Image 1 (cartoon, helix red, strand yellow):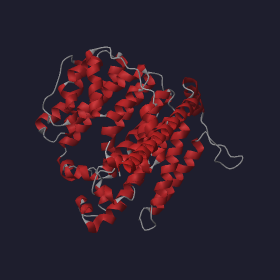
Image 2: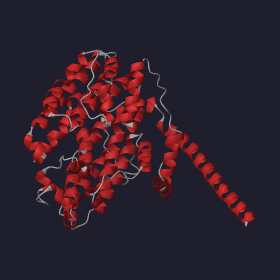
Image 3: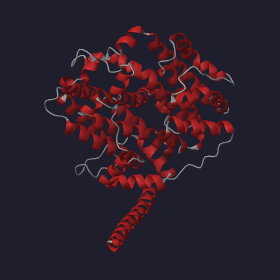
Image 4: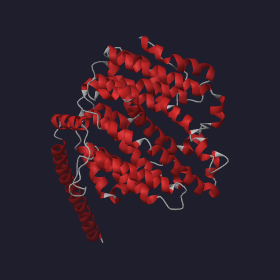
Length: 448
């Protein structure tokens, strides 16, 4: 860990405590690969996304392997789409027919830039296939169907010359692009979760909820990655939005356009917040605790990231991320539904308070934050913060889900036990640190 990150942790004691608790007291999944191929897949998972790998490894055994393979297959597909060194003559047919490779037992692809970290998912795709064919047929079909839809959508945009030259033009196109690269992921995950009976079957009839889950994450990443995408020659911010503030998207890099760029960011954040209510409703329909964690953590990361990039001119110069200590704190605090709602409430207030009256989106931002806050109060099972006599709305689906979560894992007891252990550890570290300082000073005086 760099000195800067250590200093950040020390400057935020609550985050330091969370980081220690997550590092030393978080229960690690006891995963035993059943084959060499599965062991290789686990390695690939950690290489392509260390943080996401940890969450997948904590899933119930029923879903752990299917979701790992789902992730790796889509990561391989995305690597081909992202690699600008792959010519369209190769890229387009490969994207469109990629799902057919899942019928095979041996297939690899060596046409991407070997320096790309995620290319390992393609060069070792035969290992992914080995494990894919071990899955239940129902899970295989869901993964294959989602891959086919995503590949077709990616090829559509890769073929579109106007998109390559000018990026996304309208908000409608923006939503459609996010649907192909993220909404479909949410759809596939929902089908896997309901097939495992870990979520309400009504989710299958309300795919708009899983769509919002995917779009909330994707839109957050697109706003944050402005500079990185621009440097790579790609533009995903919709012209219908940024065109109000500049003639060219790259203008926001210029000092005289920084303020306009910040206003553009606020309008894009406003657009992303439009997905929040559906995302929260989706989480209320998840029964299994490990699956709840898996779906909740990315959502709380997204709202925290939106608060970090909101009214932040640094987004126009570099990739802005939340602190590692904040991440640890969010992971620990999002283990219950009420915890997720509290996190959303906290960051919505930050966004609201950060928005200056001079921002042309001030009124709409205020209204949107108020609308979501009101929805949070309706969903929140903890009514202690409400006026006397007022009660939050609790749908039967939510009550059923909460009952299952409490039956599966006594969450509060787990948290209290881990927090107590963490406090003891932090106290021990503190005493040790002070003692070392004392002895260092003592020996220094003696030597003088």
